[in-house]
Image (cartoon, rainbow, N blue to C red; front, side, top):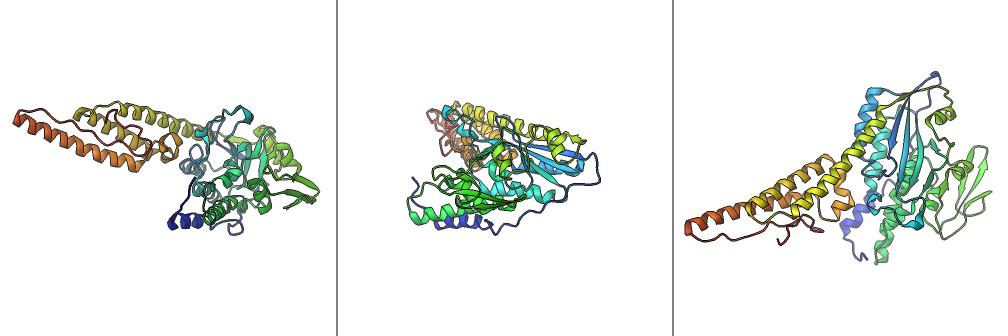
Length: 393
């Protein structure tokens, strides 16, 4: 259990929480083109089946790449298709991969959303949820125009509350909870969604019901509404596609892009393909880089404590460091971060190895002059879990 938090730590989290619900400006979208019978539609997949981790597969670097392409393609409409499910559909199987859980960097999530929205402010767009369980739901609710596929889920926002768990000190725990949930609720607020809705999706003990006035919805924090969405203190509010459409949380259900465009009022459209290609290429490339880094660090652990062995280890560290600089999201991936494989640790490790190699070479020179044997040493391994530490070093 975490028991202490420095003043700087607490202040940092509270600072991140400042643009919370009520303080985060709602994003006003451009209207759909009324004079075009066949608009150009830019499809931007945010995650694919088996991927979709927020912060890596869906990252600020990818957003920057796609924004450059959007400027070139000049679409009339943007469709963001979200597939970001941290948990499997059958929870009791317990076979979800913890490495795929979103890592909770709320400032990264906020930057992803605001960078894309601000960079495409003049282009009407739609959030189309294929599946969203976990932190991805924060992203989904950042867009006012929300559609879902028939099998989609919109849930898992208790991860926001869990982000602040583990503090024994009640004052610190309260501050961390306020910071995490405040920032978390700021993303749906940007999409124009109710604080009552966000609270019910984050806190299991909160109730949620709804009253209707035509196509207008009033979300209530109790069970007095005409439709009770969540009347239990044991689980948070979660939505299937059918429920989301029934209570007007989503604007409709569509399983294909053709169906979606028809719901938007367009029988014909031209699909721009480059967004799909760029997104898929990004996911493939950074995940291949992750595999290479893991393989390289295993090789580093096998090197000997000789000048040649330490030189090989240094070269490996330099390759891993270059990968982390190219794909900034790698440093946050559980397999690397939990083993202490960070840019700072790699840079320190490379410096230590340079010094150790120089020391051993000077010792060998002295030994040859004196006619004796050389003394062995060992470069310092990386911090954290010690992956890449030489055996016997």
